[in-house]
Length: 418
Ligand SMILES: Nc1ncnc2c1ncn2[C@@H]1O[C@H](COP(=O)(O)OP(=O)(O)O)[C@@H](O)[C@H]1O
Ligand SMILES: [Mg+2]
Image (cartoon, rainbow, N blue to C red; front, side):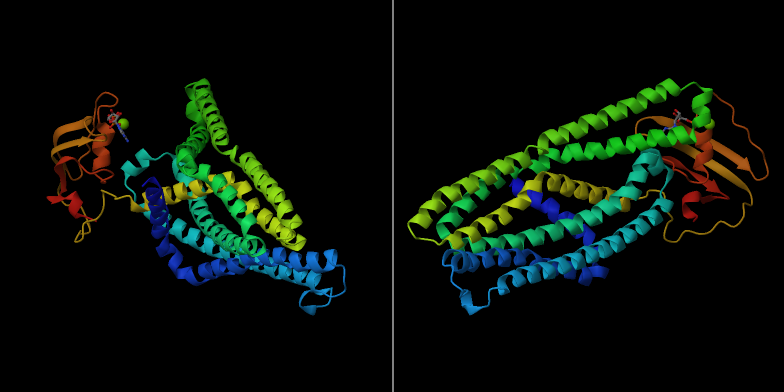
């Protein structure tokens, strides 16, 4: 069940991204298809070692498998690797291209949305939070998404073909290798969930740091006038401390994966050598089988050494996708009605009819205000600080919508104007 939910999260994230991928689907797909031979070519190299070992090294006769000249195998190995490398370059290029196009489109949409946002949105999101959403999130979302897919497909195809080689060379050893691999992958289930909160908090703390920095820049005069240096210093120190704690926590939860995989790989190798020696001496497999087997097994195991880092990256890209769509999906409460009319001139007055307003639920700021301001009149608001003077004024250009009552200009509700 848990597994299912996690997969759904995966699917939902990819689904949301689809409209952005669609215009470039062909290149995105191509970059994935290219990874199939990249992954599969590993197996060819491993497999080439078998005839080489058996006929050249062991039998030491001039004849080679399939009666090919001796130089064919080295040339094939170089040839395949060159093909593989060219494809890898093409895949990386296509990935960056599509990723760049998609994140550009995401940023464009986000910026358009940002300019329609109401004041409440800006009240709720700090400058650091928005900077994070614009500068980092779209890139992390796309490259994360595409390179995850690319890595995933390469690994899948490389694993499938390598496992075929394992079974082709020795099914007994193949079973050992796969059981050990299964044992290695088991503790990985649930890792992503365990680092989710850490990754999320790290992003928030990073944004908070940027906000403090921004405030220090924009408010340098205020800080100096009010002697707020010590206050800001402590605030920033606290953020640095948190960021450090989080990175340590993430390391604690993921850094053991890589050494553990090393141990597992060693166990797999030890098992293969132990049982392999028996298989060779009892003439059930050849030395070539064994070399091809060990090579494929190492190729199969080596990607899982980086798995801890990969998990963090996947989680970061999911988080980035969520944050991007959180912004794109934000339902702006203050928006033009369908048949809103344009206000050309004020003829008579601005009137508040029994207006009540609160920024935060259950913290009323204005209660049942009635007010009529005739055109051309100057009105002064007098009252204690925090009494609501600025709030009254900011309701007129509709920075916020009133909670109760209405404001009219020449008898028309301001919510009916553009
Ligand atoms: N953007 C905001 N978000 C939440 N509360 C706010 C916001 N702006 C003002 N307030 C609160 O609303 C009340 C009225 O503030 P304000 O209209 O600025 O008063 P004045 O201009 O009379 O000093 C105060 O309690 C203030 O803390
Ligand atoms: Mg004020």
